[in-house]
Image (cartoon, helix red, strand yellow):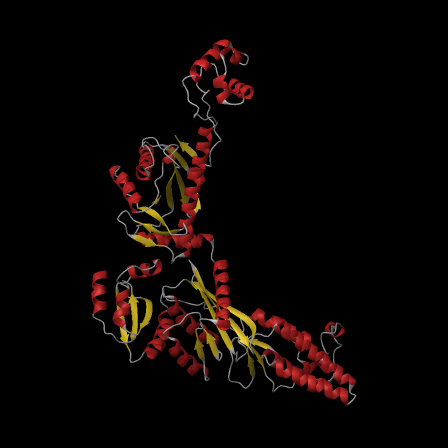
Length: 621
């Protein structure tokens, strides 16, 4: 099937257009655009792909293409087809993510704030869009309280002078406009101030209120001056707290993007008059598109749903579609929209801030299980395994000389260390430092214990990792082949900073892991843990052997008599120099004679010591 699709793709023209990938049921599962259809579509059927793309390609049964005249037409058509077909593997922003508005009909005598889903062509003023209804309610509450506007839903015109002032009036948070029709002009003026605040026009408003306050004071209208002063303070307080949300004409949007293991995130920081006034974000499944292509698709969906475009948009990646997006956004909004991808300076720092916000939102929304699953799916795809690998075993050798050579086996299950299955080995058959044969011995013993139905080695791994390169991996593969066991064996190759930079097959093919942070972190953790476990055992064994005494093994000398002799004479050298009579003062005469005779044949280079214990795990002696 892949060969047929590859041949079909090779016959496509080098023209702009849109391609539609289809499954066996002829359902459209992915829609994409291309400036050169042949190159783009062919790329799906050649070379390495990430897990999600690999999965999508594996179920592609056919594809169609639509050739257009320009790349701009391809951009518009792609967006239209995605909305129509809703393909499984295209980026889809949440359908339930609404961007409501505030509606104010200033033609009414007592205009009021109302929350609506979208604007209408009915002559009313619409403010927004906003991130959500709760955001709107909080903003309306804050502005109303500051300006002493009523927060009740009563029809003021109907109840003028018919009810007593409510508790809000007595608390100083409402002007009680319901008490007199004479307050109607003041009410409308206050609503105009509120609308200006929502539109982010606080600078002009502050200047206007300041002038009015000064004029009232000069004309000795102190009560009016005090009222203007209070209103001015309220506006300045709201400005300082940045409670104004992006209005219908935000000056600048700064877009951030983070590609997560399982979930990705688009974050948009909205600026008005150079001030950050709100943040919006969208979470979605990690796309199969490259980051610049993904940004183009997401940006189109985001602003189409939002319905409002700023004058300037800063994107986190330079994209070949930027000019096309500028044209599309400008046509949709009715005003010029400029798109930039700053690489340095203050604007680049703003983009980095947006990227940081996107990363935090994506990581917060992604569970450990999702991250682990995606990491192991990547390994499955990269290693071409039949199933997702869950159990990984890793081996390392530790030595500082020709003696006390040891090995460790660590086990990770679903990304977590499974310490009860850790094992330790002393090298038995290899003389001197020979990591290749030492590693082969350890794996041979591990497999022999498995074949012998040892319960401690009853489960084989899905992947076997070896600390070393292709030669190490090749040596282990031969051991497994001899035992008629088929397992993927990979060496863990370090970089100049001693970090695992790649996996290597027994044939020498390197599989880079730098590009996938989650896989890079997992393999690095496994290698460090395996090395730690081996070196701890090695140190403990050296400590044990360094403290062994040449007195051990002499008939009649146990731990107590050995310690008594060391305490009396101070060292092995002094014990060797002692006579039988001197030794007999500490131990029985017959034992003293055995010690005297034994030590006469020993050299001064012998060491003494005892076992210190071992790390978490069981030793296979």
